[in-house]
Image 1 (cartoon, rainbow, N blue to C red):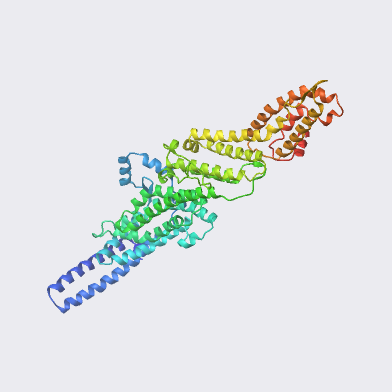
Image 2 (cartoon, rainbow, N blue to C red):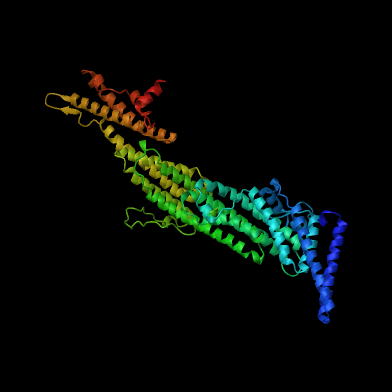
Length: 572
């Protein structure tokens, strides 16, 4: 190869090609002016020479490209937001100056980082050859050689970035776990491809072809090189955008959407040529479909929460898996608040207070009118979650346990809202107070359902007798009253020790509230009537509990395991 050897020889060869091209032009004019057969022969001779020269230059062009097409260094294939931010923070004039006068390995504009893919001298040789090939009418051959070599280089970089050649059908058939992993990899790779790989290929095309002839040769070469890889890259995001919707896909779809929003200015900058319109249009359409997919998933999620069909009550009235799932889900939604506020522009479709539909909760938005649609959707999800939980509470045969179940679950909702600044800001303190009131009301309802009957045993009514011969306390009635209390408390103690309040503070608060009602009432009753029982036979059959026994027994409540296990714990 001439250009691999002595520079002087390469320059001489190019001069010889220039001379042949001038001869071809002269021979063409002479042949037109004077129809002379000898001139025709001269023309044929020149044409033959130029064909030989162009074939040789094509080989030289290919060889130079191949000789200097090395894999991009691993550390260069890194999209560095910090560097980009530092770059874009400098003044516009400084940025323009550094771009125009840069002599480093790359120039950077905003988040785009353009690498020098081929050394300066090799670029000079390629441009010298391209000028002569295009001048001689060999534009198509030049572009084809360039495109085939550089496409292979781009493919190699794709492999290093983990971008696979998958059809849209292949992508849609992937299991979600595999697809989720590929989405993460794609987001990283897409940033590198647009901002570094494609941008650098565009720069190389400009270095070699810009200004040659009148046609936009550099644009044609760039599109020839990267259009296939760009379509391959964006086909992945397109496949995800049109795939079957399901709640677990929401956040990866939003990640894809955010990544594309972030990339769109760079896509428009890198693919600004008219011949690259289809790439810009594809990216914009994918962005639109991802937004629509996110809106659709949110709507389908609301319906899924409303219709979640499980009919098996959770043991001990603890937090239902649906509650955990939904609240974790909307906590994640709040993390994407900025994106979703822009995407969710309409209010949720809700029932009306007067709809009369027993399968849909009622909700009036008048008092929430000032909230953005996204906040209304989150509140609506909480409303339908409570509606579903209320239905599930009716699966418990014990009314007290049903109230405890609602208390646990609404309390969990409140804690999740309080635990996320973004979620609390959107839900608002007014609605949070309503939720807090609901779980406290459930706690009150539990206490009424459980303890009103127990405390009723400790009333004075019905114990005093009066007659013509004596007045005082009916010992038989008093014995029955103690027996009733003992039996009811034993049953409550045995049963509710197996119930569970997973939140330590809430469990302690409810125990304290129980003790505040139970212990003083029992202490007073015992103080008033102990002597009447102890003066009779077998008092231990009736006074089974001391005040301290009750205080200790209350500590067994809501631990989620049988009383015998609590006894062992206390003895240890």
